[in-house]
Length: 339
Ligand SMILES: [Zn+2]
Image (cartoon, rainbow, N blue to C red):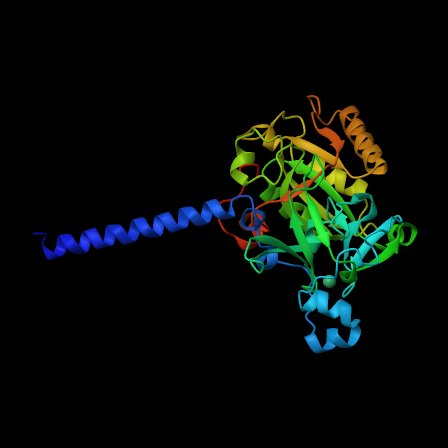
């Protein structure tokens, strides 16, 4: 016969095991989905529009309001941008935030506009959506919170992203106007991304920053996978900036200043290809500037050794888990070893 205290211990252990099992199941279920992708809603944002639903209702068409603020879905093959291929940028129909570029648009055959990359990860939010009895990743505008559509990972290689977005949630801006008015995006890798993000975020003209993984092959990797050095990804920072206030060249110069570009696959005590120095250029103009600045610095005699910074085309950027975002501002833990 068991004594009372033995029964209590057995009951306690059973509860603990059940809880651990439940946590394990949850971890398995969410692996590679929004939790790995992160809920950016809790992140620190530079700007947010908070309007009442009544105000949005007055400003938007009934269909726009239904999609954006009642999480509606337009009927497949009926949206104005489903079969639309002009060059330019797609903006949030509610608040005008740039969301997607025409060069990332492709035909997924499902009847909704599809994109393989965002304009900037800073402009989107991701939320778990269990509404159809299965798990999906809901995509929202980070500035006004408007519902845009969903993100899947059955998109084209190499990135694998498939943003399935309602036409009604967007307005189109032709390329010529977009070039003059809209912010631009730069992507850099310079070792541990916490400190790199913080340094870029302090610059006037930088509108927002996001940390994530870029330059590798694994689709939607986790931090642990990237840390293993096997994904090909580098810890990276995506910088959203106003080119009227700060130029891409100024950002590139800052990038070289804030780390040691002569260290190969390493920054200080952080070793591995995930800590490599890299510039992922978004267009030919960025490529030219990055190469010029690198060559100029090499010739300047400022560095004793060869600059090993990789300059390669941007392909995809996967946002890192939420606890990595604005890590310094949140003062969550130790600072980077490259400080
Ligand atoms: Zn918006």
